[in-house]
Length: 392
Image (tube, rainbow, N blue to C red; front, side, top):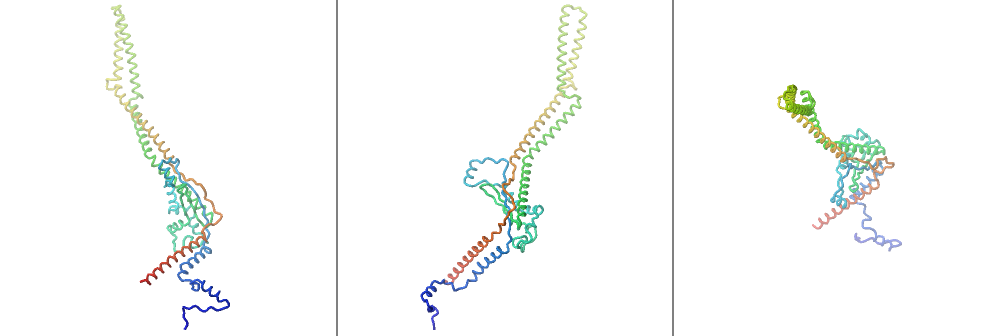
């Protein structure tokens, strides 16, 4: 009976070469590939090769670059410059808001009407594993949103502040139109943010202007009513005119009194004295009447002048308040305009002349390497468990 462990005798014309060939043969050269390797590595790689080389539809990429900036960027301080020096540029939350909108359900709903999103993502002739809807994927807005996120990518470079929008589609013109619609929606979002910020900034100033205008209108109405009731425009001017009349009458009275005194001294029996006395008494009565018109009587100008001055002062104050509120409103609008956001396009989008997706050989290689890694890790675990059981 032969020993199974003993190698077969070397025969043939060149026995030494045959023996060397057998010694150099790998231990598992005569063994078939294990089922685990076939199932974990070979089969997924074969499926990936069949899909990416024979089934996967070519997709065109339209790329656009843009920035979101304010009208006047503030100059960074020492800390900001230090952070920029180590590569920690300040985050542009407004740009991130545009990014989030571009991948949101609102963008999907808007693109359904503006860019025929359903027809673009579900193009006839596209492979069923990348188009919308995929097997098991519903034709709802949520399913369309999930498919949309597979075709749209938005990135941000923190060192340059430039945002990159990449849109994939089965036709180059569809990719360009989707990217154009997304940029237009981003610009409309920025405009809405500007309008809301401007409205918030000038709301208080506008309210102050409205209050000042209402106060000025009320003061003007009250002043006009006072003038209509008293039947003159300016009681203060009327009082000043009355004062000038009193001054003139007093001057005439003084002159007459001086003339009478001189005449009485030169000719005490002059027949002109009674006439002068009459003129003096008439001037005195006239002066008393003019003074009564200005002050001292119930219908004199003194209380009317006081009321008129109060009304004029109130109108002047309201006018000054309106001027200050208007200036504050203009400054608030200018400040809001300086802080307004702008979405500026740097490049694109353009229609691609060559399909760059999917990256077929790269995807197959990734599947192969991933499968090998999984198989290797699993093999090590199985061997470790087997040695552990043998040791136990």
